[in-house]
Image 1 (cartoon, helix red, strand yellow):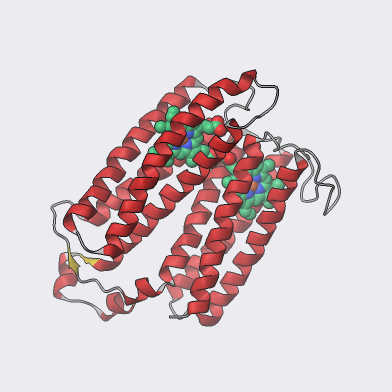
Image 2 (cartoon, rainbow, N blue to C red; image 1 turned 180 degrees about the vertical axis):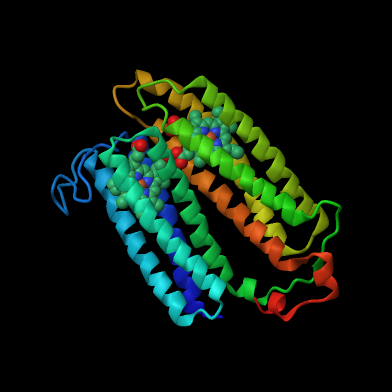
Length: 307
Ligand code: HEM
Ligand code: HEM
């Protein structure tokens, strides 16, 4: 295990989480068009950070830092990481961050069209999860874990976790569509609110099933129970934040400008959504790592053990 590489991957993941918060602050402050210029801001590399330009240009600066860190991580992976598939995940992350930067520029140039802003919000979550994945794959606990646990139920746990993950991903897309369908001074479209509430129900059922199955079947296996418990806790927080986001958002068109608590709560809801997704990714990857399907149980191939 290369401790330096793992720490660097963790740093990139944490910086990306901070970037998601910085991006959400742009949207909640209605600062997306603080400048309609890109890649410069009002023709400058460092404009005066006044008014909404603080959020917009600040987000670009954080994004540039994350872009540079991702390039650094890819080089680090090519220098120190022996597993080719992990290096490939790093290259995927690099392409994702480049595409994300271009989408960010496009959303400004096209004056925040729904499809581009939603794609930018969704790719942000995918990129974040790629960085979380890299931190997991390079960690000591991943490298030391062996596929020793048996699949105990009729529905394999890995399928339950994957289904929860896919449901959350669709919910993130729905949330982004909802959020970008109306600026702070307009009411949210009710049909999208209802679809998002339906999505919340689906996530609660799927993640609830996956996590409770982990806690029932693999009691004492902290490698699995810890992310399952954290994911459940974050889901509860996310549901409360969702209701609070709806209430404050419904009141916001009457405000003279985007005000707290609407800004704080909607940003927290976006950030917690990213954390629910990330912990479910960790849980899902870990089930694939330590629970063996029947053939593997009989014949542990060296490839499975060494990865
Ligand atoms: C490179 C990595 C980047 C990441 C991970 C990222 C992430 C995000 C996130 C999470 C949001 C909030 C979405 C929401 O609240 O629904 C956002 C908003 C935004 N980002 Fe980025 N961003 C990146 C780069 C850029 C760049 C280079 C620009 C260049 C202009 C940019 C421009 C914007 C704008 C204008 C918004 C507000 C969109 C709106 O209000 O409709 N982003 N970004
Ligand atoms: C499983 C639980 C949930 C998840 C994972 C989730 C996720 C998200 C995400 C990620 C966004 C923003 C997407 C983006 O722009 O990047 C969002 C927006 C939103 N969500 Fe949820 N959500 C959940 C439950 C709820 C619930 C129960 C409500 C209650 C009505 C709710 C209300 C909202 C509202 C009002 C917005 C738009 C906020 C705004 O306009 O700024 N969410 N959701």
